[in-house]
Amino acid sequence: MRVHVVSDVHGNAEALARAGDGADALVVLGDLLDFVDYHDHSRGILGAVFGPDKVATFAELRRGRHTAEAGRYIRGLWDSLADPAAVIRDAVREQYATLFASMTAPTYATPGNVDAPELWPEFAGAGVRVLDGEVVEIGGLRFGFAGGALLPPGGVLRRDAVWRPYLRTEEELGAALAGLDEVDVLCTHVPPALPELVYDVVARRPEYGSTSLLKLIERDRPRWSVFGHVHQPLARRMRVGWTECVNVGHFQRTARPHVLAW
Image 1: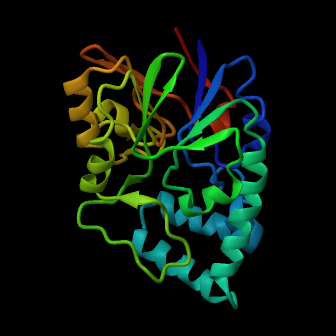
Image 2: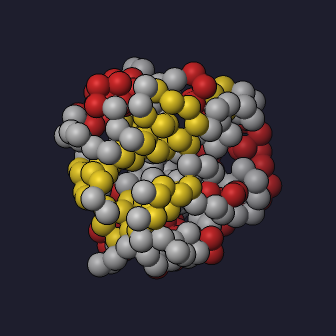
């Protein structure tokens, strides 16, 4: 069996259409949407709606960790639109129509934080199975899936926000992971909470990794734990006991799937 695994697609539908070539199945670990393109400010949903100059300003504020100022800036951009929620919803649907049509191999997918999982049923056809907190057998191995990323401790999602990322508390993610018993392959968007796997060497800061995921790996010792989320990790892979933990890569930029073969 040969399974190709990708994460952090961020709008790269052209490469996604080739990701399943030669594979028996394709596993997608989320972040399909290109919301803010930090490499090309003219692309992504914000680039299409507001133009590259405004995205460049927002990106600079985010890179400089001016979180409050960045929040005020983006809220000002939303306020310039008559119906920002409708604009974003239409842009998301437009990207999803292209991205889901690009999944040509039998596909098993879980959402990332830059996704709107409530919309996935509209676009996932017969060849795409959406899984979150569920187990499926592929080629005789048990694959367990849990999507989303982690809210910062004490963080709260604004109910009136124009865009709501798919973020969960550690407790909520732990509840999703609790149903993944005796799996051979753990498939998540976020990494386990290990310093080498959560630190982004370009952003120069750690992302949030899951302690619940790490405990599950230590307890059940699956063959593989695969994930994404951290685009430029300090360590792309490491072992935790019997388990090989692998960041499958920033697919938007690499256009190369990670291969699992057995």
